[in-house]
Length: 251
Length: 249
Image (cartoon, rainbow over all chains, first blue to last red):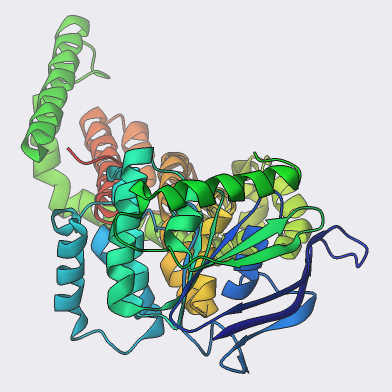
């Protein structure tokens, strides 16, 4: 379980600087996907980066099973918006990055990588560099990287937002299939209402200036078969969109 | 593909030789001997006379280059990665960068003597600034998001260096060395006309004073060969390490 307690992050060295997020409390139960949604500038990426250990919070703490979450101790799979692939590494080497840094499983991993790439349909791309891959292919490489790591916690920043609508829906399916085989505790940030509803068992609505949590709602529909055609899915989407509008609009 | 490249270079070399031949035939001057006579002379005196001079020149330029990389690469890395270091060091680098280093040769010769050291230092000075600036800019150009997955994995500085800083700065670093190398070879020639009896520069000027134009041309060809060798070596290193920059065929 991930517990975020009283978290505040300010940008700039000055104590009076603008607060990106203020006094955030959030719990993500083990083996669930929590989707954070909100208008641009609500600090949802900041929240994610603080959990990833990239930003140091000014106040508050982030706990994993009661102990502080730290990149040095736990294994955190962080997938940035731009996928974070190293341009100078081939797809295969990029996928290996996580276990290369975390060490340990290097011998038995070769077969695992290949079967993972096979599953993601990128086996033939193993020796390509990121610049030779399409957005969707880079996305698959990034997914393979975090899932190979088998992290204690998975963090994804706008994971599918750079893709076109069709590819995005495909990738969400691919993600769910992988996720169900690992059931890693996941926190993802998105500005797509459908994405939050489709993936997040718990949906956290954030509001801007300063960024804080407006509402937390349970979403039992998430991940269920044929969800996109379900009328309840449309209705929920409409409600969620309405709430975001009331909070001061959307990008 | 590589065969094609080799072939086009071969054709280029033949075209240049043909041009030289035609000019030599037309001019009929002792200062413009035709290429086959120069080649004949080069083959005749290479091992007995020129090789030792070539070796000296190659040693000086290699030593200067290695010294410049040994000092310039870490310095550029520090300036690129630590903004504080950049703030203090950048003015010093930028104020000394435009000084024509060759103008410092008299001072270097007085301080470091007429021997090897002043020549190697001269080449070092010419290359080191380019390396520092290129490596620093290479590090600056790395997008912040590249670091994020590594930081969240708890990577050490050594791992960040190996995974990001080194590969990201390599292409700009190699380009800088290639640009500086052209200047370094000219300067090498110049420094070898003082205080030494070894080096291709010395050999060329000595042949010129002896009015031995065939020897002189043989020397020029060897000096050009040294340049070509170093450029080829850099290209090879770049091909091996920076394949991610260029799209594949």
